[in-house]
Length: 231
Image 1 (cartoon, rainbow, N blue to C red):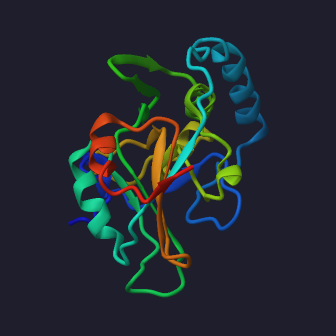
Image 2 (cartoon, rainbow, N blue to C red; image 1 turned 45 degrees about the horizontal axis):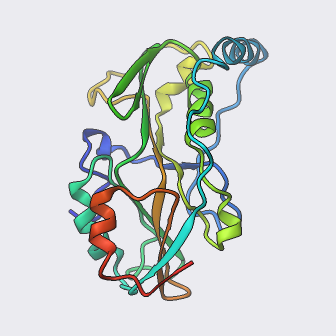
């Protein structure tokens, strides 16, 4: 289904989050669970230990905004993106509900972070690293390296950054909890993609906009014949 989360196996997860600068209306968000003082000190130690591991080699790029023809049902816009890796659709419910405003569509991230147990897997293109560091510190590192342009200056709620989910079992990285439930789905506790672009569907303004620092080539070709104007 075009309303499915993604072509990636983790797409069945039901908890989504947007991490990073999101001024204005919040489409969906998840905040870091509260940690104990011991866990907070441990997190700070891990942060200091890993803080210089991956200094960003990428200069800040100017973000651009392109307008596309408006489609009331964003599932139609999302359908061709399903062919891309890690495609995700944050759905406001329009046109079948009236309370939501923004849909956010992304695919083909510049980096990903997936954690299982005590190990995090970080992919940056063809480079794959594994780390036992605090997953929140690893995510902070990726946002520092590939983080988004300030979306507010583009008049968009989101123009790239981190999209994915934090599973409930991630709490075991913060505090000691009993292991009672059976892990039937075998999903990662955390799965986040870092995106350099996003399609923003504003149902209140009847607009489809693409905010991007860098578009994947296949997405660029997909949109090339549809652009109404660029800024």
